[in-house]
Image (cartoon, rainbow, N blue to C red; front, side):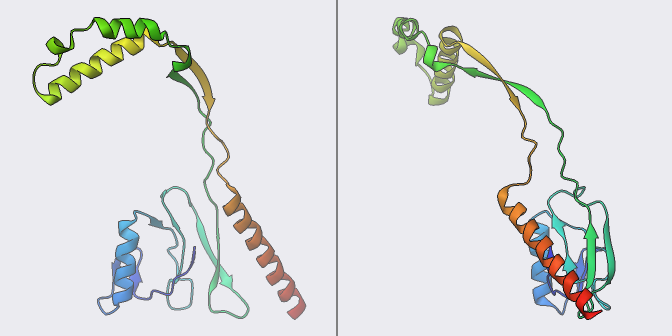
Length: 181
């Protein structure tokens, strides 16, 4: 989110004035990144310069353009973020190679007549080798099931620190407005 100062972009129709090369390049870059721009109303008296991007079109359902700052032509933006994610428990199946029956696997691989098995093209030989190794794996390597819960925490330390700094900044602006009033 920020003040991007690219005039001449029509975000509703995803188009740009031909006269502004920088704006055209910026709009092209935004389109190549597959992000959604969520602000639709003018953020100054004449243009839409303050933008809010996300990779998920449903992440920002409602952006409100409020009144101006006291000393700026830019308007305040308020919005909600949909960041909650359904928790999903899942069972992960893995092979436990620490408990593998190595001697049995070695004996089975030694009994294979490799000269007879590996005839043909490189691709055919590769497919046969994979088939043999998967069969040996499933026979001699035990399976371990492990329950995993998806992480519910989406807010890492970096965005959290940015959020705290923004709140502190807004609190300082509120104090200055109160002092001016």
